[in-house]
Amino acid sequence: MFFLLFGFCLMLIMRWNLAYPSEVVPIVGKLLSEEGMLTPDGYNSFGAMHGTIMVFLGVVPLAVGGFGNYVLPLQIGAPDMAFPKINMASYWSFFVGGVLMLASFFMPQGTASSGWTMYAPLSIIAETGETIWLFGMIFLITSSLLGSVNFIATVIQLRTKGLTWMRLPFFVWTQFVTAFLLLLAFPPLEVAAVFQLMDRLAGTSFFLPSGLYVGTEVLNVAGGGSPLLWQHLFWFLAHPEVYVLVLPAMGIVAEVLANNTRKPLWGYRSMVYSLIFLGFMSFVVWAHHMFLTGMGTTMAAFFQTTTMIISIPSIIILSAFFISLWGGSIRFNTPMLFALGFLPMFGIGGLTGLPLGLASADIHLHDTYYVIGHFHYVVAPGTIFALFAGIYYWFPKVTGKRMNEGLGKIHFYGSFICMNGVFSPMFIQGLAGVSRRLYDGGTTYLHAQPVLQWNEFMTMAALGLGLFQFFFIANLFISLAKGEKVSSNAWDATTLEWAAAPSPPLPHVNFEKVPDVYRGPYEYNTDGANGQNRDFTPQHEAVKG
Image (tube, rainbow, N blue to C red; front, side, top):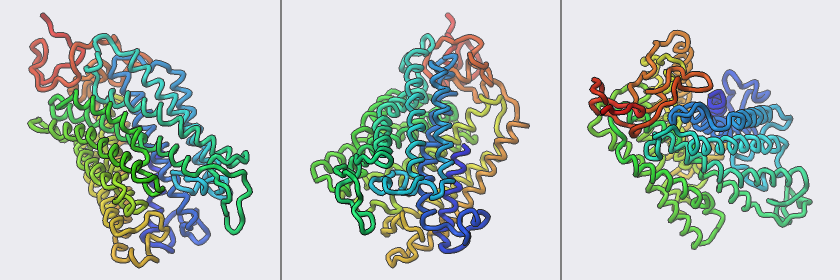
């Protein structure tokens, strides 16, 4: 969460510069330059590190490392993850990677500045900050690989008696598929990072072509390498990485929706099959990020087709969420509000991605603010809303106390309005052809003039978004100190982490007695087993007689 806040602050500084180019940045201006302004080089660095920190140090560690390590063993009736020492190694590898990324800000020439995609050859001939970025990424990737092995082994080996595959909570399924994505997609990028380090430090030319000019001189390297090879290796990871961000979010939303509609998830089996198909298809769509490289019509047609196909399972899951709401006795508490907010926001993110999967539209929209708007609707009001839903939902399990509902609802409504204020105008600017890489927000470009006013609007919305996060931070600390104490099953839930474990769970073993499972994960709207007067039946409760 610290890294999410830090990455958000980098974005605030960038947005201030886009709205008010050549003006002093308030409060932190003197830290940026002698003039108190964000320099063009600084803008490039902040852009590169905002993407890197939010994705690799913020969302993935929280969605997978945080929620996965805590909730998954509880939901499958396991006393711990399968390999605690591998878990520890994963954590320390993440820690070293995070420290390296932060330390790169103190390098004499600054941190990495070639974008979070680190395209070669620009990233290879850039300053020392790129080297630190590559070392940091190797540690972060290693951390994810170690964690993914642990998740897969835990789900396969440590499910409690009676917990068959189709009795798994949907959250467990999302973590299971995500672990396979991490395990299969990250090694190519780790290899690519080592290759790029070799190009920078050892004089190799994996990604450097022959006859490359830097300024007015030919770069003195062996040559013969391919910059496009880096793009292929990067995007082979980076598109599945989008689903690494989204799938755990879907799992969290599923748990919150089922609990607060007091209904089973509609189409549970179809959601599971769609999830598996989604994971498989995520490995055959990567080149739709590379239509501009001139891959030819045949290959472009192949990747356009696979990109359209992968939207089908996403639509099935999203539709199942919406249908699950129908006829439910909905409780509009804070986690439910964030889960409900996820649905339309993710839908907008998904629908606006379809034109980018078609080469003819993508060539016009590539590198414009339209792409930024689309991606952020998927991962900001999409995934991050789901993460907030998860924090509010499982906070009583971790602490035995409930977060304040009033502060939580102010946090949600403010964030919902401001998020849309930040990202929806990006579609307008993108369709007008404004590039996302302009340091001054397009002030010096004639075609950007009719949509320049949106820069100030988005900056004010971003500042408002930052303001409403203080309600969350205050709520977190106030609830830790003085929050309402609740029972072990604070939400009247059916899954094992609520129904069979105390709050907080017992150290090292989770449960007083490891439960057996007799039914599916979402048996709501029942008369209760064994004649009890309630509308749910926990997974571990056997029916007598």
